[in-house]
Image 1 (cartoon, one colour):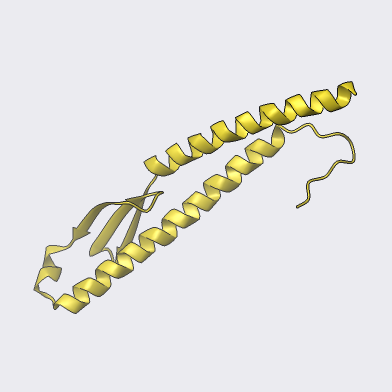
Image 2 (image 1 turned 45 degrees about the vertical axis):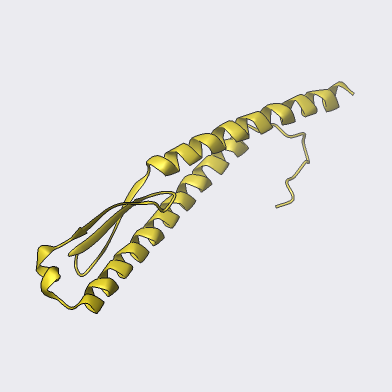
Length: 114
């Protein structure tokens, strides 16, 4: 039964490692900055990995345009930033999951259910 006890200890350590790495991932996402744009860069929106908008830049030449056009450009820039943040978050999560899997020493023949 020593093998089972060792496996349980390894599982507990793995759980603690996973929690620590997930906390670090959340911190990385909070610090992540992505920029979305529209109107060939005339409207830019910067947000973090939690989708909090950090800044908005509107080219002064757009201030003479009609309100609806400016609203559409702003919405498009926000949507672009959200897509970029999601893509970057998925990349980071895949890297972190890969890092977690490398630390697992499973018995021969044991497979994950996925």
